[in-house]
Length: 485
Image (cartoon, rainbow, N blue to C red; front, side, top):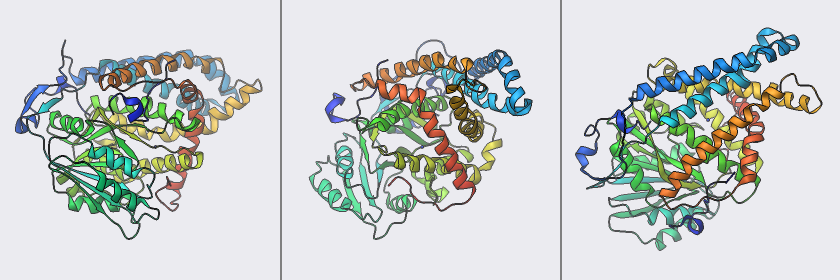
């Protein structure tokens, strides 16, 4: 199986934690693009027009059919496991090992097969943007981040605020040197905003929000490398999307994938898992997370919300606040940044624990989304199912695999192996979709067979117990902190 991204950026680019509707869904001329003036189309929908709701119905029918087939095939397994655990518990275990994941994967694959990206066009006039770069102890990354932003050939005004959150290393000195060395085009400006003490990511973002000069706000993490034209592309997507759009998530991929086994596995997670889910959600007008690492927001909408909330999952909570108010969040799959992911297991565990806590924070803060009638309601409830999925996987499936190694096939057995061909087909399909997007941007694709096999066979056994740890920490009200350093 060919591996994927070559995200060490310049050398290989060829050019340097778990919305967007289709072009057909939005009649031409109904977007905010009219006000700004659109010219050359970059992407144009062709062929038979299939409404988004029809695509949703088709994907739902396919997923329900797959789930029904899974239930029929598992009847013997259900009888055997019932003799050991009792019927109710056996149903719960098999449902969250086979039925629910099968439904999710079938719906996801069907949606992406039906997907066409919304039309995105070059603008006659590009709006001004304010870019917020949150930085805390990023001495090894901040210079490259600033340099990649400075090299953006964005035709509109660009205000960049590097927001230091009381760093205790030499991040400030590195940022100052990078700003002095930056070759900026007219209308672009970079400023360092120093923080005397650490106030958390939400705090520094809100400090920056108060200083924003432009209506469009873009957030970029201090350890991210912005690929060429990413700012232009995400703005074009925002302009081309329906008027109700108040945020657009960019595509975040792994920058340091060659460091070790853990970063190689995360490369597949970002490239396949996270990207695929966002593409699916984007079809139905509601990407659930405009991630802080790279997203665009409407400044006035953020200010109406009071900015980012002081919690560990500030990006998901502010995204759900926008959705709760009936706004739309898009996704731009070809506006790319490469981010540095954890290369140590303890660091990775802290990060994913924080993501899990952020999900529970979002549910506690915005419970009304559980009953808000819109196509994305299925994804809200999808996230509700993550908790039992992770619990069953951690306390049933993993022990079942251990038992199978000693010849006891109560939970994991031949039926479990039947999902492997589907997993291979699914990953091959997503690889093809992502590869096409990379090719259009002159990005190379490299081999990462070790990472792929580990991602498909081992990664969940590592990830899902960590998620359970995060759910427990949030439920018990344990102390919160930014957990990636």
